[in-house]
Length: 451
Image 1 (tube, one colour):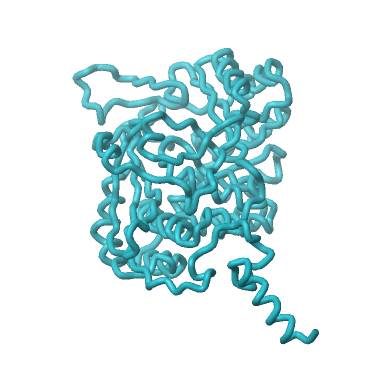
Image 2: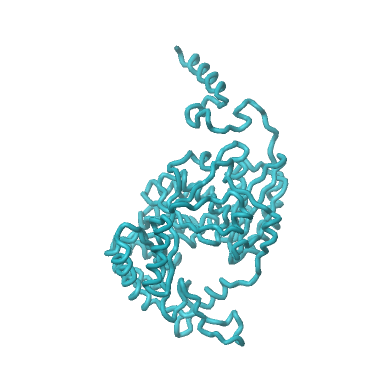
């Protein structure tokens, strides 16, 4: 049989299975396929509307983008949640990106991302990143729906059956943190992030406000933070937890960039005996130059990236193997398109992914995280939280958290929908609590400090 005969037989065989010959054997005949693979010519697809939907079913301001297409019933959803500046993102989408996108083909995901990114001339930043993210994820959702495939399949298929997660255990005392960790372990969590409230200080597990005088304006009520007490106490917490919980559970902690770099270096060294799965954000983005110094002094696994939105912040850390986990909030950097490239870059340097996944990521964003996690060979861990009933009602198809894993359904696209009428019953508030918390975090001498 010559090459021409082989190609002819391969093409006929694949066609009988309903797939182009070059897909035969990769996806298998059991996979749903797009109409073009069945020999049908679909009409050109265009974006006819871009909607920004703000809702707060769990009390946290979420921003979701809905892209409507010229094909009846075909639309996509994307997460654009920058909860601290939700209205600014809304304006960026409605006033600038929407007019730019009308009439474009949503299947041209890469071109749409690149053109949106360059359209404002000035680039990067959380507002632009989240605005583009909403559009980008919605386009990926549309591609998956039109192909009849879940997005993870478009990214190369599953590398695992489900996504391993960690959740948070907070408390005001060692015993409270231990109790919270045990409760999560009983639910099947194998990875637990532990945070301790420092007495008299504003920390995780505490909402202490120094000035409780009702006559003091909310924007002038200060929170106090001092790093030395924290640095002395944290190793003692991990000593307690290892004695009480044993070595099998993986423990994590978020420094939240709250200590001076020399103290962060010492803290990483002091925590080595307790074998953390990772220590997150020991430095602020402005201090990433310290990682070269830190990497040489500690074996504690390091995670970084929650506040990153510019490649110049994270590419050197990855390429020089200065971190072990990348912790990007994927809507910060512009959505699924750049995040999958970051994951691929990390693979070559043995850096694992640990995408940001707190309450200020919409269920749509969590679904995007899960699809990327499923298809990423160098996946590390996924931050997770249970969805409230209201969130599940507003967003049918939320990923399911069970036995410490997040499970995705196999529906086309991200497998998640949105009830707009129900979402409207949970309007966002315009009070800026994050501004009051982070903007008024000060040392005892009154100087401002990083959150």
